[in-house]
Amino acid sequence: MKTEIIQINPQSPEPDKISHCARVVRDGGLVAFPTETVYGLAANWNSKKAINRLYEVKQRREGKPFSLHIAEKEKIEEYATNLTPAVYKLIDKFWPGPLTIIVSTKDKDTIGIRMPRNPIAVRLISEAGVPVVAPSANLSGHASPNSADEVLRDLNGKVEIVIEGGRTELGMDSSIVNLAVSPPQILRKGAILEKDIEEVLRKKIVLLVCTGNSCRSVMAGALLKNLTAERNDVEVIDAGIGAVAGMLPTQETFDILMKEGINVSTHKATNLSDIMIKKSDIILVMEKLHEDRILKRVPSARNRLYLLKEFAKMSAKADELNIYDPIGKPVWFYEETFAAIKEAIKRIGELI
Image 1 (tube, helix red, strand yellow):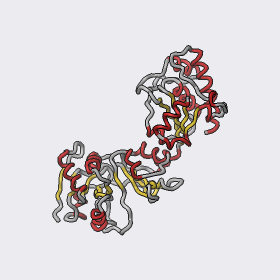
Image 2: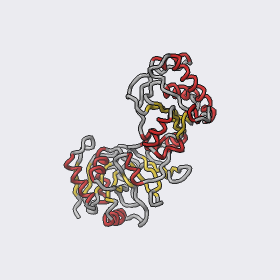
Image 3: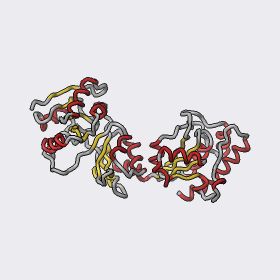
Image 4: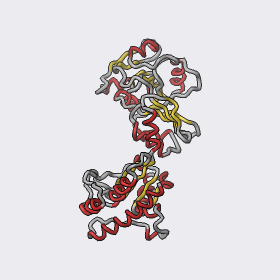
């Protein structure tokens, strides 16, 4: 077999060249390509012939699994199940990037998944249109390659295509974390420092949600951040289910918090995203309607989702648990709203 060497611009991959390489992968061929860590060897996971060739070409022990590479974070949900907040914390922080995570599959097995950030890698995986596995492009036991020349030393004449995309950015393998077990285990120390992974996993994320993220969740978030300022195991975030991104807090909210010695002048409203819901350990909302909207989007959040006053155990009566929107109301309404939120946050600070 003659290996085709194709030069592709790593900053701006040429669409026609990417399409050609993707077609070869889709049809069962093997294509070596650059990622930010090392060069990988792409194969169509749906093709038994391609996977058998991959084992043969790499001289890899039969049965040792290959990691799946994806081009979009959301794709993980097509292949994995029982995804915990820990999974979403890591992928939100480190994807796209040099992190492989091991998660449970729907057939009660496990699989390694990674989302690379190299533009050639992302375009190739996306264009292939099939699940792509991609171990390092070398013979088993040999050093992982950081250039097309290093790939060719092992695989020239054994694979259809080697993409020449320059030297890899990091020059070392991805870190591997097993999230199919509890607590998670770091299986391979790679491009991401172990302490950075542990820091992300250690933090409990508390998400505070209202409608516009300009008053109630701003108050609650600011108070809880202030209360937990000296703790390194808690991260507080806030958002709105219908927020206009970039909007500033209401003047009433700003003034009330300033009286508490808290300046929120740099706060800008954030619209609630699914990843925020999925990575949070505790989700606290102001009204039942927020709870309903979140559960409609992410049903798996149910056991982590509470009304703010409910979590603070301020009442057992459902009709007393809502904290209503003060937008357009008089200052005294804002002050009553703030008093209720402040009492709840004080209790919550003791609970978390």
